[in-house]
Length: 323
Ligand SMILES: [Zn+2]
Image (cartoon, rainbow, N blue to C red; front, top):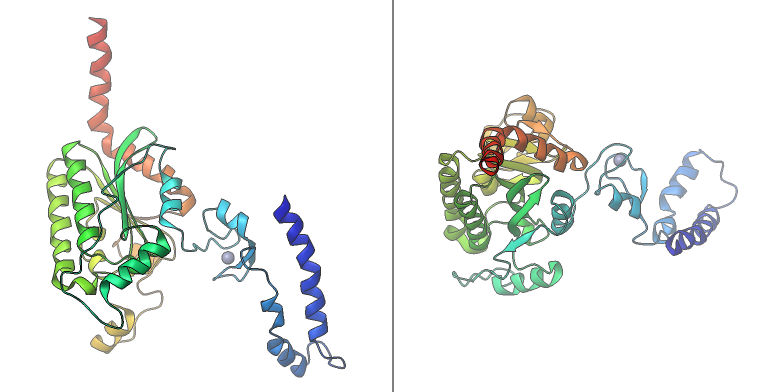
């Protein structure tokens, strides 16, 4: 409530500044008036931070609390804003059911990589800013009636890049999933392999896919969920080999960037190239699922996937008790 009263106090101030910033003697709608409006930047300066967010698609001003309640999606046009990995995780799993694995694992600077900044200094910076040790959170959890091995990537950590730690954490997750006969779900968002680890990061592509092949041989389902953006080495490995591939609306999904492809092929790219909707039309992904419907949809898909796996056990158990 205190936030709401703060808001109502600030709004009249904004309007006052706005009116004052319009010089007198200019007709509304005239070209000079429009020009002056453009120049009258003080309005922006006076919007308090952390109260309103402008929608990136429909330009609607959204009250931040409302945006958070709606899992960072616009109620007007459905635009999906970036969401923190832990918030996404909480929106998917049953409360207090998530048991994190390998949380303390962090990267080693095997190549002594130094560009503009050294790799260890970059790692330290992102560890401080995100509170995470690397770009993926993995663990076992419950999602409705299902026990799941779940990985959620974090774009805020070095662009969600896949180095040895991301690859190793996901591989261990998949292997535990295979051992415990659990479905695996990986929510991806990544700029690709982590260049600071060179060849070691590329090796994670084969390693994760190898683990997924064993998981698949055991007859267990793997659902890959693509969120904005999922590109390069991640899209070229575990993100694109799901038994079911879901994606959030409007996400950019691809391998190389559109400019590189355009320059290489010397061809105009079709409209909507590398978006979720474009890829659905061409069979690259199976379904577009909004963030608000993701948990429910995953549970429904898992009901189908595991129908043959769980039902016989459930039937057998009461019979034993009866005899
Ligand atoms: Zn919008």
